[in-house]
Length: 364
Image 1 (cartoon, rainbow, N blue to C red):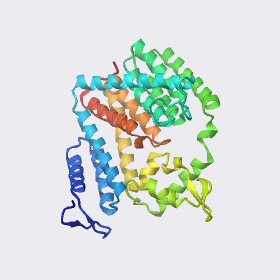
Image 2 (tube, rainbow, N blue to C red):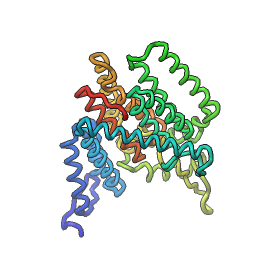
Image 3 (cartoon, helix red, strand yellow):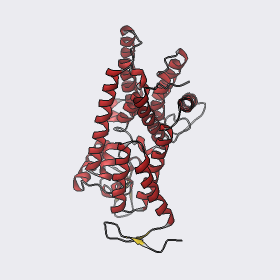
Image 4 (tube, rainbow, N blue to C red):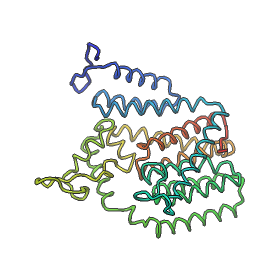
C-alpha cells in the first residue's frame, strides 16, 4: 500500500512514493554517506540526479543494483586479511571449476549451443569472468598456481572471446613489467609467447575481422549521435529501452522484419552498447565522462606513485585486475554481467585496501 503523499521530480510529473521506493532512497543516502570511495559516491550521486529527473521503473532497478554493489564493496573493503584471503581462494577454485567445464564443452563431452561457456550464460561472460580471476592466480608465483593460471588462460581462449583475450593479455603484460622477481630473459620469453598466442588467436580462433564487424561500428556511431543529441544523458538504465527504438528503422542493426510496415526487430546483442563507456555516457551524459576520466587518471597516478615508493607486489594483483576490467569495458558490457561486476567491485576494494595498507593478496 502506497504512502499518502507524492514527490514532484524536476520533470514535473508526480509519482506516488511507495514504501519500497522510500527504502531505496534511504539506501542511496546511506551509500553516499558511508561508502569509503569518493568516486563511487560521485557515481551514485550522478545516478540519483538522473533518477530524480527521469523516475522510470528501470532506473530504480539499476539504482538498487548500484547500491547493492556499493554495499559489497564496503563489506569487502572492511574484511580482515584472513577473510580476504579466503575470498580470493574461493575465486581461484571457482575459476578452476569453470575452466574444467569449458574444456569439457570444448571437446564435445557436454554439448552446448554456441561457444564453450561453462556454467555461465554465454561465452563472452565466461571469458570476462576468467580474465578477472587470472590476477588471483598469477600473483602468488607458486608453480602450481602459475600452472593453474596457464590452464585458465587456455580455457579463456577456448571461449573465443576477443575482448577477454585482449584484456587478459594486457593485464599479464603489465604484471610481467612490474614484477621484479623475474629475470629479464624470463620476461622476454613470456612476452614472445603472448605475442605468438595473439597471432594464433586472431588468425585461427577468432579472426580480427569478426571483432571489427560493420554492425558494431554502426552501433557505436549511432550511440555517439544519440549522445550528441542529448549530452546530459537519457536516464539510468535507459539504453536497453531507448536505443532499439532509435535504430528500429536501420536494417544494418536489424535482425528480421515484422509485419507489413517493414519495421526491423533489433538483434538482441545490440540492446547493449558493447562499450560500457559509451553506454554509461548515453545514460548519464557527459558528467559521467568527467567522472570516469577522473577515476582512471587518479587510479593511474596512484599506481605509478605506489610503484616508485614500494614494491609493486603490494598492489600488483588488484592493479592488473582493474586494468583488465578497464580494457574489457571498452569491448563488452562487462559491468552489466553480475558475476563480472562482483569481481570488479572485489578487486576495487582490494586495490583500495592494498594501496592504503600495503597488503599483498594472492590466491591459495
